[in-house]
Length: 188
Image (cartoon, rainbow, N blue to C red; front, side, top):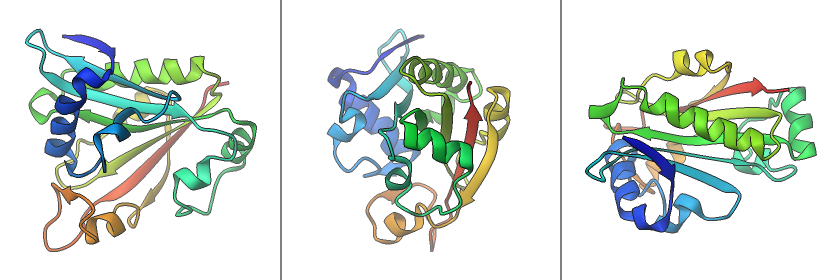
């Protein structure tokens, strides 16, 4: 397997993997995968050119945290608030690994690559956001091994989009059963 930077060549495969793991419509349009130059996306591809994982992250613009969080998390720790005001806050916002390839170190490898890329762009604080539901991979131990600590969870983060049918969540039963979990790390 190899890891490479995402290019539009992989748009269909990344979209299919996202639909399979997170739910159809998670990305409103395929161009969202890497909408701007600040977003960095890396994919893990097998020898047969099957995309089995990807990670997405970015260095947020100054004062970009609250809009990123859609104003849903009011209690921002002082160090993250300061990093946000200074434009040195990075976010790892999507990590996806095909279920049949989980537990093989792919997620860890992808997380380390995007971590280093965002830090290389100037981040001195990072947050990681993950969708947690009944079939989601548990990432707490992984984030702790990478030096992150648990910060917060929001039960409502996915609920509105899920309830509105914005995407067909793979974990939805009679109601939304997912939440967002947030981890944080001070790099310097």
